[in-house]
Amino acid sequence: MDNNTNFKFDPSSQYVQCVLAYPDNSVDCASYCTADACPLDWSYWPYRPSLVANGAFAIIFAPSFCWFLLSFIFHRRFIGFTVGFSLGNAMEVVGYVGRIMAYNDPFSEGPFLIQICCLTIAPAFMSGGIYLLLSRIITVYGASNSRLKPATCPRIFIPCDVLSLILQGVGGGIASYKTHNSEDPKLGDDIMIAGLAIQVFTLLIFILLSLDFIVRSRRSRGSVDGQVLEDPTHTKLRKSFWFKGFLFATAASTLLIFTRSIYRVAELSQGWRGHLITTQVYFIVLEGALVAAAVVVLNVFNPGFCFKEDYVMKSGKRIFAWMNPREWRRMKHQRKASAVVEKGRMEANARRIAGEEGVSPVLSSRAGVDRKPVPPPKTVTFQDGRSFW
Image 1 (cartoon, helix red, strand yellow):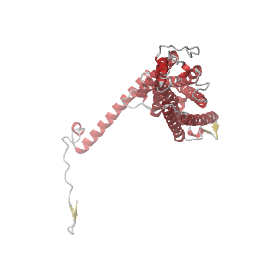
Image 2 (cartoon, one colour):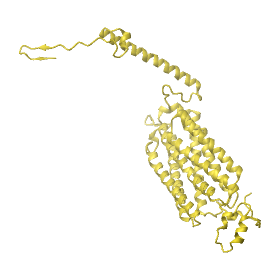
Image 3 (cartoon, one colour):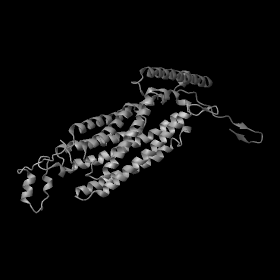
Image 4 (cartoon, helix red, strand yellow):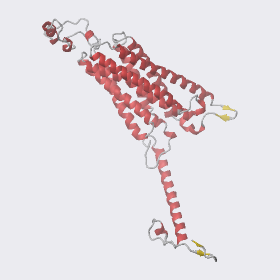
């Protein structure tokens, strides 16, 4: 049920009783409004938020949040990406919980402010995580193919994303304060729009630089003056199915968040009673569905697992064992063989030292135990009486 244009007041409702009791408006009777007592046009929502759609989005984002954290425990890589997408998913969950709460009470201020702040800011964290991925991709295909060095990309895009996040947060806070005090929230809206506009502009520059990098990388697959420009040290990684899927997922997620950000700029530009913000289907498709798809593709092709060919497994840590058991067993035997060789080398050194000092090899392997005392240095005396050690 999106609206109730044919709404009829119930004379027995608390709102009607309040209006009749205080015709001079000395008491704010709007606090007595409910979905059954007042028309939805009077509420914060010109429609009743869909339980099915908002519940589905909450179900998508909640497990995604858990999966990003659990996957980090497995691979222990891409901490910046994990933090960005984990925070973004957490805020998405909170925002959609607010929309679910508003279904039964669309006149309540709390759920409205929760969803407008959380759902507006959340994708900014995700875009920050995506910016950090470009430097890793540049490293795989060769820094010579990029106009920016791998370390330069985060230094440019992350501050822009932080500025966008601050403006959206400050704008949301001001808008919430103004709304709570029944004042015009236009100042907060304008600040939020400025933050979203910076996010859109930053994403656009990021997309253009990524496209330029793709073109230059494809051209470098040949030889120039007898030298291959594409970095040959990551050949196996570039050919893997998971890494190719990761590249597709990163591109798709970037375009989805970019499209969503454009929608939010247009939505807030029309004001709280504009056509876009008052039509629920636009929100479901251009906000919820796009962001959910951006999260899901990078959940499936998580960079921590898709870069597994590029990692060196540390001794004693079982990384990616469940994804490639055969590779894990091979590396496990290799580590055992290396440990045996290292132990043999240490024992040989112990025997050599023991032979030089005349001590049992068994005792010599125990530092400071039963070692032969070192004799004091000899004194050499010259004819003129001088001596030295």
